[in-house]
Image (tube, rainbow, N blue to C red; front, side, top):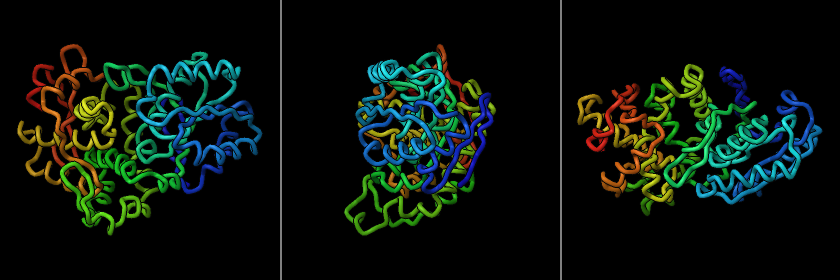
Length: 370
């Protein structure tokens, strides 16, 4: 097991390893005395892992209650949040108790926000079960729900007391979800992590995909992305967590350096919104990264050829690089982004494949970047 200490104001450890769902009770007992623990999960994850986590907690002396909501981005809303509050209240959960978010990014975001706001704060643990959640949303304390106007517009900073990443859970993900997580890992590479880029750029080109990242007919005879990265999975997650932690610990509340983690996200969130969230987060961010690299080349900021190299890396991970939305659609959606500050918008632009810079532009110029 790899342990990585996150040195925010409230410090905590990210535990990464195979089979460590069975250690949830042991890890919890080092942090909080036996109490009532509410496990929150979704309809995809609960049938797979709820019982394992529950058994581990019960053996460690905890009383366990469960709440399961429908899987998917459409559940990341105020209605689900309110139902969670009511469940906690009906269960008489107190600030001496604890909450576990067992699932992917949607579960982690909604549960973390509920934990931050119920009784003005109940300790919680992130137990991510997707690659995307392991390397991104479970670390750093950002929690949120979506509003009709846009993604993640209501939320709170709320650091967990621990993160438990069992790499075995990645094996049960659909291929699309594995590539979703790969997009965030590749983002850390472009931000400066050479080792992550070496792993993903070194993947075999035996998966043929079209411009939207959809495997062609030859895909059935090739290895899925999980099979190609499974031997490096602990290293990929650990390097990604360390990379994210380096930004979070310098800028916990996202007013400076942490904004670099938004590489590909301003355009990516606009793409998600335009697709009515039918396109997944990682796939949208992949397109967003390529678009901002192309725009950077046009503006003379990005080294020529960077977008082509990034496109190749993304396609090796079965990620899309194009979308059908026109610039006016993306402009309207992009200006709803929470990174907009008055008449300014912050963009993260690659200088080359391993370095980025921050550009603050007037919102009027955003259409030119699209």
